[in-house]
Image 1 (cartoon, chains in turn cyan, brown):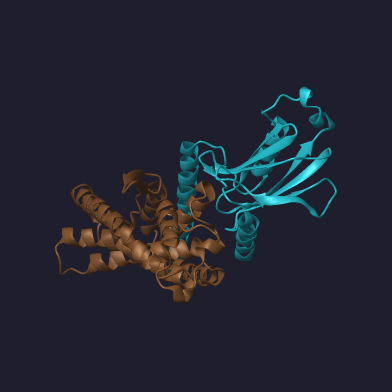
Image 2 (cartoon, rainbow over the protein chains, first blue to last red):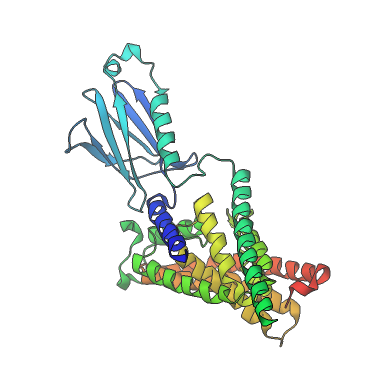
Length: 175
Length: 221
């Protein structure tokens, strides 16, 4: 029993480790012929000066590489439609990747309004983010506080119950 | 680790950019060290020591001590969310001194639990560095307890000292860990900024002790 609990805790830590610290979030904007990706930890904390590598659809050699600016922006110009891979690494243990879908309509600048945030990409990023261990992302602080307090007090209650049971058992054996 | 944060060990205090960079960095995180900053070997060693201390500290906790430990863990967890402006930036409470006074040698498990949930829920400090953070802050609470149990001084002075050491001891340990991870000696001088935070914390600890003495003196050993 103890072993399985220990294994579950270790597994939890292993799964959570890559997402520890800050999770990177993305916001993709398409300004034909340019795609602009904003990377940030929180709305006030951009991922600045991070190394970015762009891969064209179906290619393993980088199409473009460079660094995000101080606002966390990086722009590139796709030359074909498909799924473009965007990889970011700030060199401090925060690394992530997303795929940016570029449709054939993108190359017709009249069909896509400039500066429109790609809702599909945003939803995908949100879904990806929620699948990580940073499960509280986007939840208001007050709920997080209540959640944390409930966990701490709940664990305390469990330990108290176990200890009380042990103490009662010891007392009964003594008597 | 980011190359710009890493310095040559022989460089001594390091250049001014490094100092400013680390100053801002440390002040923002305020003792909750995030992942990727401290050397992995240091994290592993500190993690092993922390787990050992949590076990030793909590192993013989009695049934009566458990609720106090839980309440203190909850208080430590929330304390980090109370920010106040200081020296052009903001810092938050630690409460390690008061935790040491109330819990004594049982301080480590609540500190560990509070840091674990802060890391998971607020991404405040890393999971890999959880051992480092627990060791630092648990040692601060332990130092507070050691000062508190010496009966040579007035209770108010002991409370002030416990609050002060509750911050300074983690800071000293943190500077050692940064040095072991290859940062320049400048980090030690920069950590002097924490003295202001320690003074604030000591005043809060004194206030808390006086309040507890008046309301529920049985809580103070």
